[in-house]
Amino acid sequence: MNTSLENAIKIFKNSKWKIDILETIWFELKTDYENEPKYKEKIDNLPNWNYFISDLDGTFFRWTLIQEAFSLFIKYIRLEKLQKLDLNIYKHFLDDYVLFKELENDAYNKKINFWDYLNAGLVIIYKYHNLISWDNYLLYLKDSFYMKEKVNPYRFSFSKIKEILLQWDNFMFVSWASRFVFDIYLDLLKNYIWKNIWEKYTKQIFWFSSYENLKEQYVYNLWNHKSKYEFIEILKNTGKIKKILWGMWDTTSDFGIANHLEVDNDFYFMNPAYSVLDNLEELWKKWVNVHLISERKDIIYEFKKESIQILN
Image 1: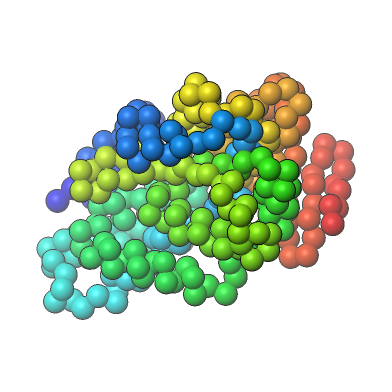
Image 2: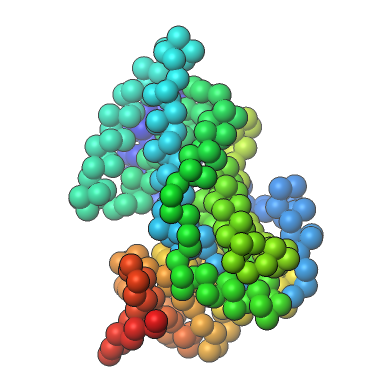
């Protein structure tokens, strides 16, 4: 059995973030995106045109996709009949789950960094994917997402994608979320666009997310500053991106995209994480127009250096 969640976290922290937490459970991290068929086909089929580049979860929806996947993974295991489970693996799962719940409570009470909790969730899903039928879990995940009452995107974020699509430019998502959960949410957004703008415009939407091969135990990740920067660099070197119009994200990992923007480009942080505020100087030095947007109930705010502006 792979290392415990407790040891995985210790190894990860002792490395001072020089390794990825998934490497502690023997997953290989790869970065040759252009050589992976799942990416290569999409890159080859990109039109040569202008792109607005954005994140999806947290930027368009309130939910954190992978967090939802953790919760439903745990719930699905509880629904399984005990006799269907490998009891030896299940015992290890229960031991790790105790620590996972402690981390979850600490994250919500702001005792630990929220990313520590997300990292633990990644370990739980990837380590125990063989405990259940993965295909059945994905069906359960999809059904659960589609049954949610609130699948509407943020109004500000949707206004930006609508603006881009109506001027016949392209919208590209580059998301850290794993492909198995990202694809479900993207379908929800495309359905919303079909209903509220026009079905034809969904053809102007392109997307890339982290990709996992659970059988061969390797991952292509897009969940940090460096990986996102390098991935966009690959796309630019193909000549597919004529111009990056704007950018929109919610965390500091998205500075990897912002660093590709030209002078006077607009970069929108939608309901940004607190850590974004500590790093804004990096973008201001590049003369990028930074917009801090917060949407709460029926009000949309933009926070500026000296004032707060209501946008609606």
